Image 1 (cartoon, rainbow, N blue to C red):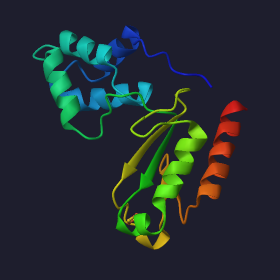
Image 2 (cartoon, rainbow, N blue to C red):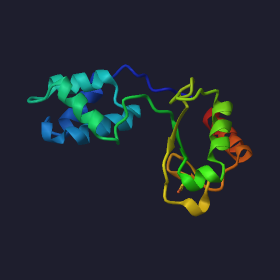
Image 3 (tube, rainbow, N blue to C red):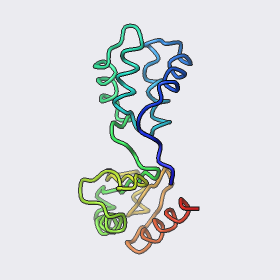
Length: 164
Ligand code: FES
């Protein structure tokens, strides 16, 4: 797998700043672009943008980034796994599914991203698909009625696809 180099490319950041006219009113759109590239907001990028744009500071950029849930300050995996642990999913066995994912990816409780950077993992509350419980979402694709065996096979498939 090709992991994006997390040291930021200032040329790319300059292009984004230029695209949005260097205006502080476009900060959120700029941060969205940065997140598209790196899959999270590297601290270096926030400092660079805060220093470069008139009327902003790194502290302001950091404050905005932490306020909005859409922004991640931690690196995300290529595959973002969300395990629903709302009531319906919990009752129908979301925890064994979560444990199977952790075992397969060698991730400890509380660990957000797998060591190879390929997967990130979080639990979420009700995804609004309780009839399909337990539900797992990977990069916006919904996997209904998950079991430990099924999710292990799905993860194997994603790993193989990534290696091709
Ligand atoms: S509780 Fe999981 S989708 Fe509603």
